[in-house]
Length: 130
Image (tube, rainbow, N blue to C red):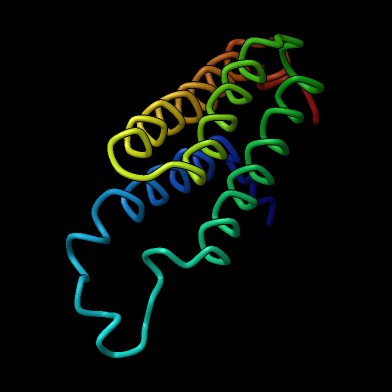
């Protein structure tokens, strides 16, 4: 059984989940600290999500670049998004949400563009073996 993983879809999904965590979780679960649970401003959790986004994004974009399209544009867009994702960690309030929005928009765009370039490449023809 040959199962292929669409790393761009995984990257988009983790970016969306990260955005949901950062933007909505504080509103929905403000009572968790009463029970001793704090994942809203948990540095370990947030840096772990950033590391996961970096690992998935890097793998996906590296694979697309090497195997399919040789375009640096998805990498550049991802890098800008990742920079804003890291900067978000050092700011609070509205600036943090603005950085989050820019980061998620760039990272999702990079994965989507990488996905489109990979599917337009000649490597994706049914006669090409990977």
